[in-house]
Image (cartoon, rainbow, N blue to C red; front, side, top):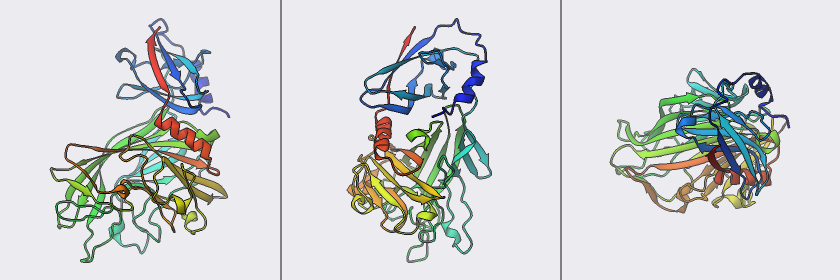
Length: 405
């Protein structure tokens, strides 16, 4: 497979370095027990090396490298067999890698792309409802549209059967807050005709583009609306990152999401046992017919058998745009109650990672609730072995040691 970085590397090789005499670092990557292919490598940089960009492999070839604002270095490891190591050299360089992953504002939408190909869009403030849809279903703070490398649209918004469902989103269903029961998921009205809750975009903290990844950090508000005056129950931060890596033999994008939720005040946010609520994904409109989408979990379970089970990952997809495509959610092992429980909708192309299935719990003041997920957005039939390898990559990334030469 031709590397995504081939053309960029050719340009950079022609850029002279004026700092080659400076001390360098040896970066050693260990595969561990897993074969690595298109693996995301991240490691802490010494303070003296945070401006360095000259990463080369054992043969002297430049490797696209990115240092973030928090002192972490990032690159994509093309291939490394289990049980082996690879050495790289990091030093000062006069090179500047072009942005392989770009994040651009388009009105109320952030558009994330790899080498100019759209991957995902983040809707900040509420989008417009389709004609005939009640306006209280307007929603923001979600990802849609989401596309595969071949350009197939794998998410949907305002579907006819569930107007509140939307691309990739995060909302709780059954809750208890200050004596009330706000429903942040369904966005419908209660028996008195009142919409009880909403998840709203608050602000954008930052965006970034880069040669290895691009993304954004934003804030959301979980508002209890039942009392007439909106009252914040939770505050949420999203950190979303798209990588310039084509996984699964070049057929898939990788997108990471970290959600951090905290109590907005001194009141507990209780979550009674319930079969759905949490991370939600609504699949493509072409998958609406009940017999079209296929589901498979890390346990090998299908839609029916996998519902209300716990798994490390879930993939669903089907015929789409003249081919086949799907989206997988990889669940990080550090997540609460991981492997987390799943709700696989029996009739619609929709999934939910639902930790409340395992019983009552709560988010307490001063104790952030952190959820980590990696999305594999892919063309083709689901590759169970490939998805398992990608989950291992996510759960147990390559080990990195850094030494001065």
